[in-house]
Image 1 (cartoon, rainbow, N blue to C red):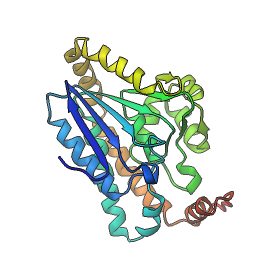
Image 2 (image 1 turned 30 degrees about the vertical axis):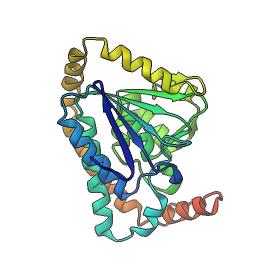
Image 3 (image 1 turned 90 degrees about the vertical axis):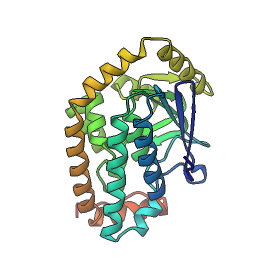
Image 4 (image 1 turned 60 degrees about the horizontal axis):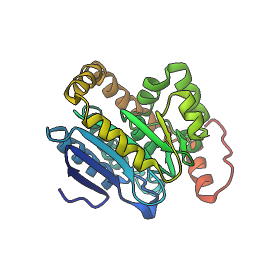
Length: 260
């Protein structure tokens, strides 16, 4: 399949998906969400693939949702389309019958971090930055961010980390249980390749059965979280705090939130 915003390579039971908008820090616009949804649905029905590695082209994994898209999609119809693709994308992703590995370098923030957290295994380069930073623009996490954070660290810690929206070093994220491995600078690809080799030389059909059993119990919960996130995001986008957060981001200044 031909894509504009992502690249997909499949060989020897492994698929490598590259987020490919390096000029925009691999932020997710509507087209990338649509293409990711299509790609995950395609892979979901491809029994030849047993490992999926997700990485970013250029200097970062993904800086999250496209801020320009937020500014130009004030139309409620456009917003419904965005959230529809996002739900399709993450539901198909969560049900992939393969081991998914996030290969993070540079930064994984916002929606980009939600996608990484949805992976079975997360490897981050030692100098990367990690952030569930929706709060900085007056929004709640989407892309299943609430669900994946809670699955990783539990409800109390997930709430606190979402509310703080801090930019984390990999060592802090590892200690909290948000990621699984830290790679030395320029070694993240080599570490991921080693993990892929271990998985492919294991009885991987049993590995995938375990994933299917555990994930099947959670699909309805993820569906509900995605629905609630979309509803909450729609409300938050109408707040003064959200508009202030966007303006402050663009103007590179500290936000002045008023709780409105």
